[in-house]
Structure formats: structure tokens, C-alpha cells
Image 1 (cartoon, one colour):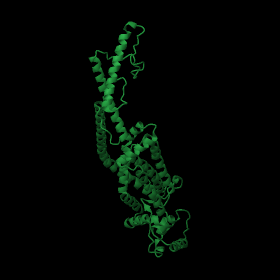
Image 2 (image 1 turned 180 degrees about the horizontal axis):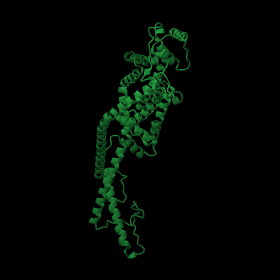
Image 3 (image 1 turned 90 degrees about the vertical axis):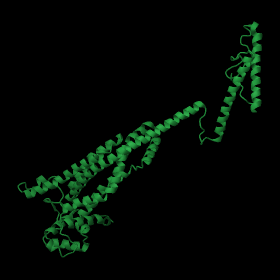
Image 4 (image 1 turned 90 degrees about the horizontal axis):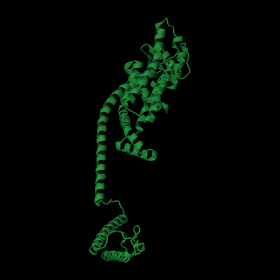
Length: 425
């Protein structure tokens, strides 16, 4: 299964080596080719990540608006992403691609005979036998094929007849053997009097350090146009400092060829992010302006509707909501009709009392909204002022008679015997 997955990577790397006859240059062209192949999805991912970052102010506003209601906040955030057509997880997937490729390339590089060249197991056994016959030793460990490939390169004439697939693979690049693993203790292992001894070792030692530095700078450039939420800033900062250390570690435990790939990949990533940040930055500035205008227009329209509703309410002409039930509409209409009839009765009673010379003040018989709570002809000071009690009682009875007559007439006109007869004076 692994061989099936790594086959395209092995073919591509071998094709570049056959074209350039330079292993280091083949690694760099391999990195360039993968960047071009992944350019379109990476552009989409970058665009999505930058758009998500631009929505942070709106998400903070939603967080304040729905503080304490996490479910509502999540609902509004999902709605915002849907309106803006953003998949917040799209950037996470593609950010893992370089690391996946690194491990695929690692499998290819450490097994040059079986992956890059496609040597069969029988031919591989013949290669090992030939190495032994030439006085060499068969190495063990994960990088045995790399060491054997270096031996074959030095004595290729003795191996050429084994298979037409066998390639004279030279790991040399800028004086270094990219099949070797860098050592952080190289200064204890080299002969400082011989340039040919310490120069290649120093070069190999610097590869992981340069790789880590470029990895840090690459992440810094990538995140420059992607401001994150406060709760995510700590995580991003940790990743920015942790990943370069991981890159340095990988550089010191794996063949130097992987370090060259990581350096090339970081340089290309920096260039790509710088261009995309500028390109999408201008595009998103325009989108932000359009979004602000759209939100402003929406707020203006909502405010206009609110003011119109208030105006209609003041005039008693509020439009009926189409979703309001028939029962509620009927109840509202009845309440408005009763209010109108009550106002008409009040005016009619006042007019008749005035015509008869009766007072329109609230009668002593009324308690709250109950007109006859104390009787129809109640006079509060009848015992304190007995002289005027008879006249006041007659006046109160006359007022009650007028009110009853008006209520009776309205009940007959409307066909409603239960018409409100409360205090509508």
C-alpha cells in the first residue's frame, strides 16, 4: 500500500534527477512542482482563511450581543459563515499537506533502490552480494539503502549489468552528500586541518538550522494577513515557535535531502504567501467595503421599518402581520371596536348631561372602574350636609339615568347586551 502511495513521488523525483543529473537540484525542482500542483487548492484555502480572519470583528460583536448564550452565538456564527460562503475547516486540511508530503518524500529518499529505481528483491540481493564481493559491508538500519547507493555510485561499472533500471545516483550537492544525516556534534568528528573534512560537515549542520529559521519566517508571513481571535492567538504563537524546532529536529535525524526540500518548500511558501497576501488583501478590502455598505443598508432599512411601525401604531393603522392567527385578528378588531364605541358613548353621555345641566364629574357612587359600586344615587356627604343631600341624591340619580339610557341605546344599536358600562366619562 505504501509503495502505491509513494510511487508518484518517486517517479517525479527520478524524472527530475534524470533531467538535471543533480540530486539537490532535483529535490528543489520537486518542491517547485508540488507547489505548482497544489497552487489552486492552496489559493482557495488561503482566500478562505483570510476571509475568515476579516470576519473576526463581526464575530466579536456577535459574542458581545449573545454573551451568556453560547448556543445562540454558535447559531449566528454558522449563519454568518453560510452567508459569506466560508468553510472554517478548509484551511486546516491544506495546512497539513506539506507535512504529509515530507513523510512521503522521506520514504522515497531512504529507499532509492526499491522506490526510485524499482529494483526487484532478486536484483537487490545481487547488489548486496556484489558489494560484499568488492570488500564493502552491508549496512543496517533505516538508511541502509542510502549508504549502499553511495557505494554503488563509487563502483557503478561493477553494478551496471545487474539491471537496466539501476541508476548511477550521485547524492552530491554543493560539496555535501545529501544521503548523509547532519550531526550536531560534527565539530568533534571532523579534521579541522582539512577543508574537505569540515566544510561538508558544516554545510550539513547548517541545513537544519536554516530550515528552522525559514520555517519560522514562513509562518510569520503566512499569519501576517490572518488576525486571529484572542483565544486563538496563544495557540498560533505556540505553533509559530514550536514548528521551527520540529523542523530542526527532523533535519538532524533524517537525511540532508529532506532538509533541502524543507528549505525549498519554505522559501516557495514565503514567496507564495507574500503574493497571495497582497492579491487577496486588495480583493478583501473591496469585499469589506461592500459588506459594510450592505450591513449599513440593512440597518437603515430596519430602522425605517421600525419608525414606520411606530407611526402606524400612533395612528392606529398598524398593518396586520400575515402570520397572525385569525383568532388574534378578530380579538384585536373587537378590542378596537369596543374602544371606539366606549369613546362615542362617553361623548354622548357628556353631551346629554350638559344639556340637562348635570355635572360631568366622576360620581361619588363610583369606585375604580365600577360606576355603581356604592349605589346608583350615592352622595358621600349626605349625613354631613343633610340640607343638600336630597338635591345631590336627585342629581346623582339623574346622571345614572342618563348613562343607563345611553348604554341601552348603544346595546340595541350594536346588538351587544354585554357592552361595557364602566367609567367612560
